[in-house]
Image (cartoon, rainbow, N blue to C red; front, top):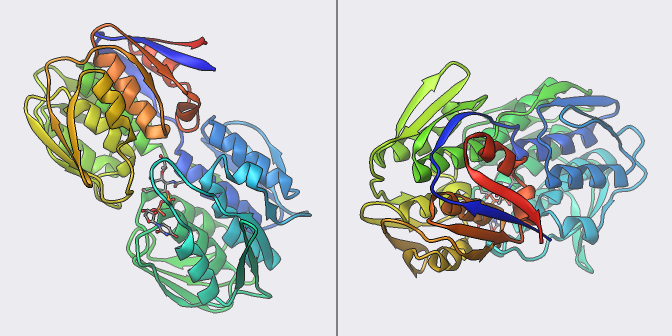
Length: 416
Ligand code: EPZ
């Protein structure tokens, strides 16, 4: 199994191109299930999770071509079952449920099972489909859903759920009548999906707000569309400069999607300047400790919490980091402690006492964003860090070590 070897202490400089967003590409590729014919998607990142969704779609009988620009044709679906073997490797596979029931009238999708960062049930997805008239059963670890034709409904999500909103928004496009989603997720990835669905002929209003209205239509048509930049990848590189010091330019990111992070990093002493086609991010002085509370968008992204904690571990004072979205997203703490960090977890909060320098050590990735935080910690640490279980990082970052090396970092992937 591969490992990352990082020699810390180098400042970052230069330019980095931000890839397309994993969490937009996944639902958008699933939306191809809603129609017949070739859909073309540009700016799709080259990630393990994208390869998994391609495998899943082709297991239904969809035709798939290309990388970077991907074409999907779901005209001749022969199966509507998402197997446990595929779903267990990627929870986002649940995003095929809504489109399959809406278009094919039936779907059998394995329940995703447990996850390192929390229980992550899909009860809100299921309840919403039942509200739309689907007959849903849980059998042998699978969700079995049937509906001759879904009907519009007024749906209130108890919690703001990103994939729940996306799943039901897709299903509602082909339902009979009007669906209203209340307390809907407002993430940019939800808006990207809504824009693609609208270009397929769907009637959607309110995406980006917490009330989305969908008027069902009889059929949709294929489209050509682009995936938005990955704000979490962009945020990860911005925090990397925060930790190492230096001056980089992010090409192709959308600063509107990063407002809360930009403000937080400026409070922490960083210089962030919009430039043509991106953002210039620099740090020269010390890191000021700031408090962070994760929230659904437009609040501070939970997918940047671990990276921000690594930065606060070398801040100039105390920082309280509160995680409100997932109940178990502090797995990176024990690994940061191995690098000399001073962090105490109390319930949903971590109290981080900044220290001058972290020390390199062998550490282990536990989930996608935790692994990103440990790479950042290694970049800022004294000495060598060896990160194992890096299959986590490949799920959500395209060639991260190559991009960081191009910015001057001493990081390499080795076969262990
Ligand atoms: C999406 O996950 C992202 N994944 C996650 O990114 C991200 O962390 C999360 O949204 C929050 O921003 C994709 O878009 C593929 P939720 P999702 O439903 O949709 C609870 C990454 O690192 N909940 O918004 O699964 C749930 O347990 C990944 O790229 C229910 O209780 O998250 C959580 O506490 C990790 N019942 C909260 O809601 C449900 O039916 C928000 O989860 C659904 C959710």
